[in-house]
Image (cartoon, rainbow, N blue to C red; front, side):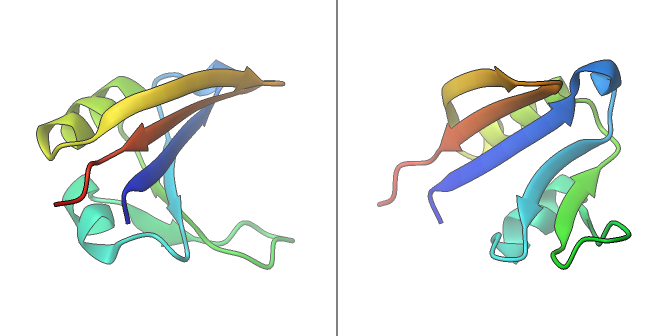
Amino acid sequence: MPYVLVSTQIRLETGPTMVGDVYSDPAIMNYLGARKTTMLGNNFSEYHVDDPPRLVLDKLEKIGFRVVTMTGVGQTLVWCMHKETE
């Protein structure tokens, strides 16, 4: 999967950081040290890490991902990352 979305709440820039969903590559989630969680009331799971977004972006860059775009949505910061496929 060549795309990864990374997000965090503006007041939580120091973590935790959301790094994936149920369809995310398990190898990448393992590399990031992410844990799968389901928030009360949600019928879907997400992967989270305790690291701040900057460390997550650094880790993803080391394995070939690049930031495509970044935006703020309400109180949430979102980065779209892409990795070229061979």
